[in-house]
Length: 204
Image (tube, rainbow, N blue to C red; front, side, top):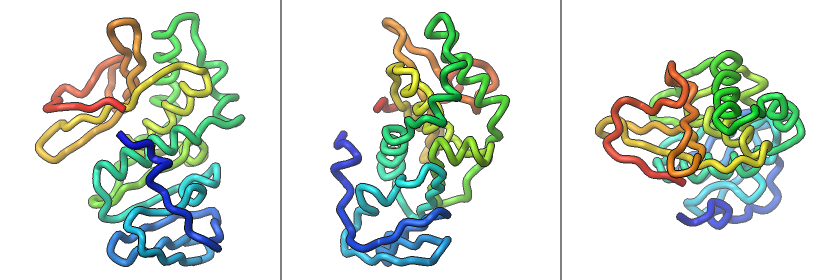
């Protein structure tokens, strides 16, 4: 897989403001809804190296994007999600063992963050800080938060994306543990459990 940072092309003179960001694949317009600044580009790939997750409390909404676009943006958000605020929350979640730490993260997310289903045909991603601020997010943003917390604790992990029905996909975080792995999925009622139906899956 190509690293997400290689897929972003600079756009000059944009001003990034806090608020929701919408991207239209058809019009190639990036619109920032706090100040309604617009940037046009002929590039079908989106944003710039700094435009997507430059603000700690960013929420991004994208219409008509594909699964690969979403995976790339989740990985980018995780990579840029390690900051002092996340680190302060991660520290007390460290347990005496790897599985205890993973369980603490899962318990924290289950108890503190409410699941909110995203609108159809739209990708909605939140940075870890934005999820902590809103106290609600979807499955993809849970991955961003889990990954950022693990990254703050310097624990290796992978993003798992699975087809759980024809054309239906779900993502969560797994933590390698010897020859096995630990599952962190706040949408599942039991810790360290995967979705009951997996047609095929990919790890990143």
